[in-house]
Amino acid sequence: MNKNYRNLFEKIAHRYGGVDLEGLEKVLCPVLIPIHSLDKTIVKLPGQSHYRATFTVKIQDEWQELMQIGRTGKFIPEGHLKGDVWREIAKGRILEIKNNGETAEGEIYTGGSKGKLIEALEILTVNDYLEIDQYGAAPKVLSGLVEYSLSRIAVASGYNVRRMPEDMARHLGRYYNYDFEFERYGVIKKVEVKSLWGTNTDFARLIHSTGKDYPISSCKYATQDIFAVSLFLRTGNIRDFAFARSVPSYEKPYGLPPASGYPEHVNQNPRCEIGDGVWFGTIDEVWHLN
Image (cartoon, rainbow, N blue to C red; front, top):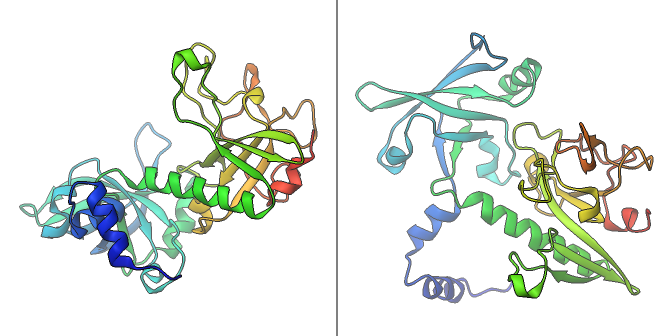
């Protein structure tokens, strides 16, 4: 990669009114907080299906402002700092500030069953880190990079790509409700980009805002032709995607299951596994499915 990084930084800093390098780093890069202690005893909260273990971190000036009750983050392996891909081991949430503000105690949890938490705790060590998004930008940055990566993959595969506007003036027509149009040999298909479900990355997250045409928060089958789901939360690779045809399972064997009681809407959290006959690893594999 032949880049003049100083010129790149100066271009970005100029666009954002002279922001300094430290500011860019804090907004774009989550802070990594060392774990002080782990208690892997699993407890079920009374009256809930929520299982958790606990951890503590020492509060330092660098992340003091983030140490608030309810703050969430992700536990990631120490190997990420040595060049390994990013991956989430479990989630963490601050529950209490102790010792006159010197220590934060929190819960370790996963979105799946008790077994998922047991698996995570077998991996998690005090050498790993709690990663906290400092200013809420990381999800949007990741989303943008995912769409950029998908666009580059599609272009390299021979498709013409059009990125749809994020909003639409009323006098210009209806909102598109999908992210891209891919075209090849005169055939155009609508592509919607989604992610895995952060609570449990075994599943995709096929959601849509509710509104006049969306009585539930699930995508409609008719809105797009193809779902492209980023697998980053599972693999740590920005170029990894799973693709599925946006048709109901009651019509096609490779279709996606419908939302309960809403046959025009896709189930918003279907299991996502490449090779299961529904999800595929390339655009070409779903392109010709009707």
